[in-house]
Length: 296
Image 1 (cartoon, rainbow, N blue to C red):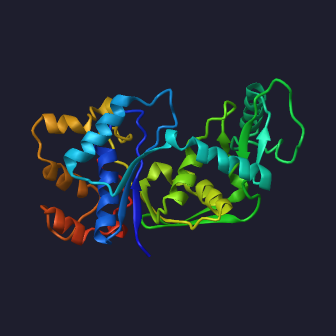
Image 2 (image 1 turned 120 degrees about the vertical axis):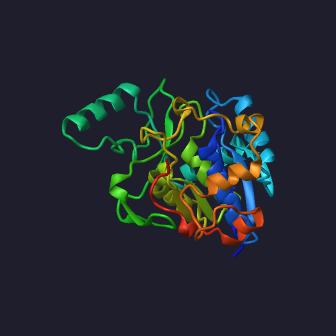
Image 3 (image 1 turned 45 degrees about the horizontal axis):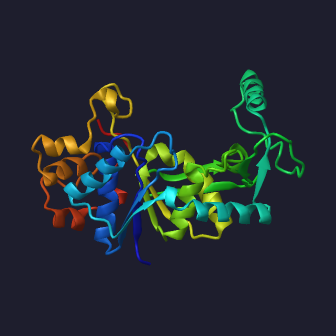
């Protein structure tokens, strides 16, 4: 099986070293296995996505020499494909229109919180065929009600989720815009992604995405959820910790290979070796050797 990885940043903020390390791990794994590395820009959040953030992603990847075999693909250029899948799922009964108002959902959440229950959508429109005039419905995926999803993660090992704890995910908003988790699934299936390497803040998305991949009839990829890079306060690294755009390192005179050597050893090691050429990185890197613990 040919290995296909992807780096899929959202251009809602500047690419910093946390994202670069994820890109590096994806690139190394593909290169080691003679596979394909895809760059995909996940820009469905049109309100927060910026052209400047896209520029930083493209120029940063180029400066670091993390060359993609395909892409960049842009999710906003694939809306017709997403709409086609949604129409197909509605016809097949794999998705449904939900006419709940914002007020109804807020009341449902408040009632569940008062009962000390985990807030989740209760599926009240799951089997209804009527509609509400004047209300633009969202489209929800019909998640299985029974059974469980088992994620065999390269980093975290076996992680099990009960379907009864997963609600019916919104896959299209009231204005018809497809949502992040849904687009990821369609893209990974269409692009033949075999190994998803990403931050472990996405681990809870994985069972929902696996169920949607199954609904598509797609092969489930292997997953590796790598730990976050943390700031001094133990929180995820962000701008408030002084995290800067990757291009700032170029402006400050850092060499690309020096930055990559630093990043590859955040959560991964190979004996006592501290300095690697790119060829040595590719030959030695194995995603299964990445630590579970976050790096600071």
